[in-house]
Length: 153
Image (cartoon, rainbow, N blue to C red):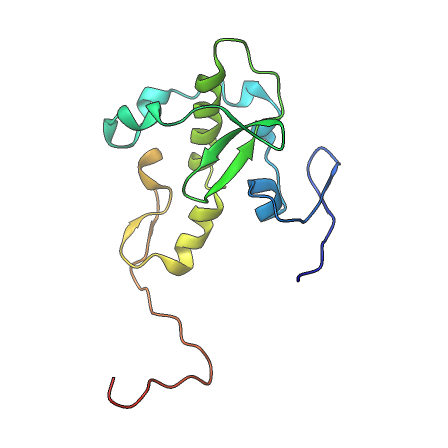
């Protein structure tokens, strides 16, 4: 069992370092747009939609994690908590805007992992941001030190 660690986020509160499935616990970080709605207000959801396929937006809804409003980042497989008051009737809109801001900023843990694990060329920030750097052009399979391929395989 790994040792629990204390990590402070930008609000100064302690993160538990436990086994939560949210971005804060996974990365030990929070981001300003999780706390300030004005930082996502100008996100144009239609302009930011990958491949101009609006159907994917229908899958993004406001949820909760540990009793806190959150949006699910499927590229990290974790929740991104939203720590600001969301206007009634605009819950899914804000969830979508926070997620898009997170992806466009390159802050998704899943995006961070692409640099090492992408097996084919692809935009680092997906199709959420035009002119994104390409990753995965020189992928090499990981090698376990001391392991040798069995004879005959």
